[in-house]
Length: 172
Image 1 (cartoon, helix red, strand yellow):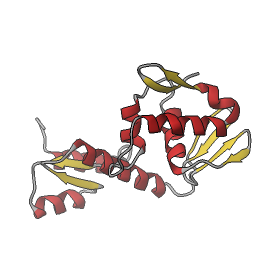
Image 2 (cartoon, helix red, strand yellow):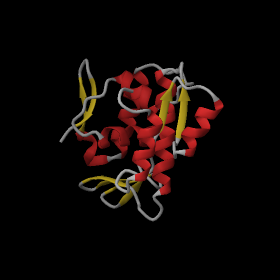
Image 3 (tube, one colour):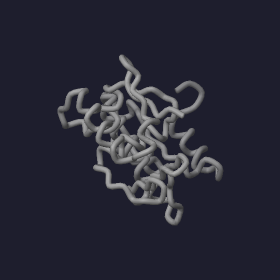
Image 4 (cartoon, helix red, strand yellow):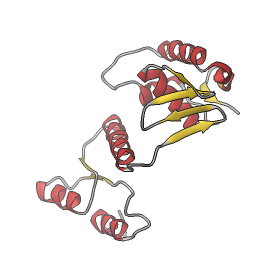
């Protein structure tokens, strides 16, 4: 990183009240135990040493984001579009005030699409984001789960649109 070290940047972020709560993950070639402890001492949420895979980094980012959301006690995290409400803290979904039972996979799929309204996700992007890395599934598994989820969310099902040859989008 030209201009300053990652350690210095982390120190500045944690010292500034406006950025102090932003999670920090070090991706670094500094691989000694002393470097790692220094990074955690500055407030890092994770420390990933090179070499690393993109899948590993994605998994670590997800874990840090989940932990940082749970720290915000007393602040329910709701993702909503009209009468479709997803409570991220309680992992529950309501459609027009009525609870809807989704599987973990259907829930995460709905969160992905609703939180990125208008963005088209390929089946592979959905697989990488929603399914655990150690599970082997085909891209048609996405189609099956989208179909099941659509049935459960009633009148909002038509907002989850299939773009032939591209993937799925939550379209307004």
